[in-house]
Image (cartoon, rainbow, N blue to C red; front, side, top):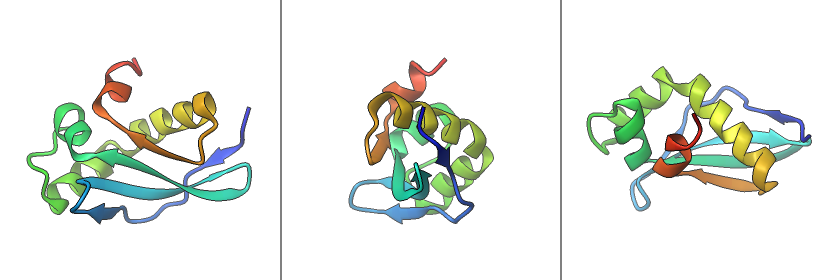
Length: 92
């Protein structure tokens, strides 16, 4: 089981891919996890794909999002992950 942590930081918005990204550490190595605007709108109540709406939804649901990201890091052993709507839907 990998050791995973999520340092507190402000998410980084990417307008080109409509994602928010945050740092994570997996087994002591820095990495990133991202979440799509679609996932934030569909599952976490973001009102639009605008940065401020996405960040507000992310911040309000950060604990659950990080729990889902942790599960995906464990499952895939990937160095960077992108959470999509389907990941949220099937996370339980």
